[in-house]
Image 1 (cartoon, rainbow, N blue to C red):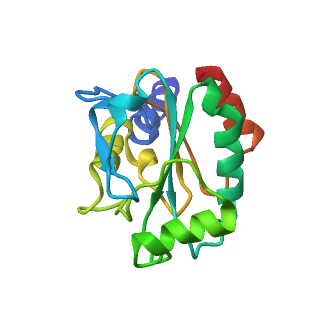
Image 2: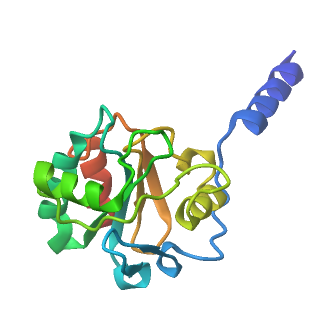
Length: 181
């Protein structure tokens, strides 16, 4: 009976344990993305900083999180945190044009943290950032919806991920950010 029980536990652990390999042939700092202004953001400029990567969308029910993302940026940028917004239409809730997204963010939320161009975050057409995240952290790094958060530590590796429901100024996210800064 004990052997059956132990065998069951081992099988359960094998199939349901979400251990992440994290081999990291590349770090986050080896990647780049086009900014909403058309310039290239080389992440090597962010070395030794923590980065919160958030896929955003203008028409999402979580769009009001832009305000807290800006607060987070204002509070922690001098301590080494980069907030990076990645507008995405993967879930069909983003404007069709980068200029419209930029104007929407600036006018409605006074956003001044870095934003990328409209980018795919899931599937075969996902940007290299998201393919890298999935390869190194597993399925939990793949955005399930808009305003999904991936926290990159100062070594350029994924520290943790946070669901869309996790607000940017939540104690859970703030605690993790302060731990790695």
